[in-house]
Image (cartoon, rainbow, N blue to C red; front, side):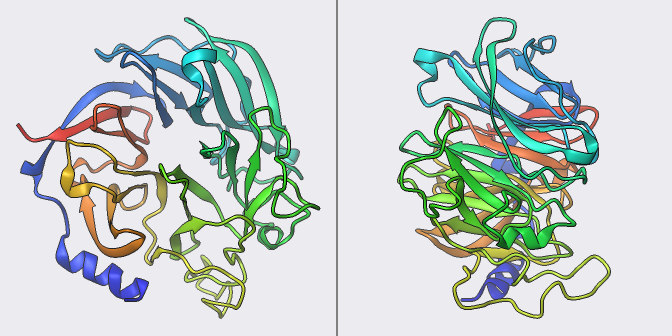
Length: 358
């Protein structure tokens, strides 16, 4: 079944989940455009805010003062403080990684900071990676981080908006999934010897990234006017932007007349009109067995979470969740307790916890 028919089938099957299937609790509110969430041992949380604050939130919802040691971020347009992830060996080394937009405006980048988490801040902060070349647009930063099962680190990078052809060039980090060691160095035997950080290419603005237990990498990216897509990322593969796309330019013109081309990957699923995806998780938990193994994709424009029902790696349906919240969903995660956690994107952003209805 093609992706368009799957999309239509998903809408017909379920416009939204029944409210009685789950309950939503506000863990904390008053966050300034929160972007990413990480779970700390013991039950507390780390949350990034786009203006440049990293905060710790306790299990009872108390929000800390901004933690020290966070670098100055370039806050403009879509730029700011992005992802926070824990090192796979966090229990031993207390290492955390932040991605963020770094100025100046005429030559800004997406960068990665590595530091050791202390009680009140980040210790020994070190910038381990900066994307290149710099750009003069405050948009399309990508910014999602994830560790592969071998301990190497992935970073998504957008195309800079007005430099979209660079997504097809191995001479640029723009429009790529980048892979490196946890110290920001090239990995051994990369797909492209001449571009050792490039893991995949042909991306527009990827803001969702996850690695399943078996090592499968899922990534989603914003299309222009339509054409949002979820991909399974393979090393060295070309995902087509801007040579192929299911979306149109914002003025209604074709970005490309082609939706497929030999040697370029097809998405697992795509959305037109755009839902503006941000954040994504594959549900692995016990609280919602009906969602087991499915993708939960946050949506900014659609103000929902889109559940992509998977049978293995095949999309068999879709469901709209949490539409009643009327919130832009920036991040979606599954906690160690099996609950689903959401971050809402606003000046009064919230950390929400979703559990089965009592």
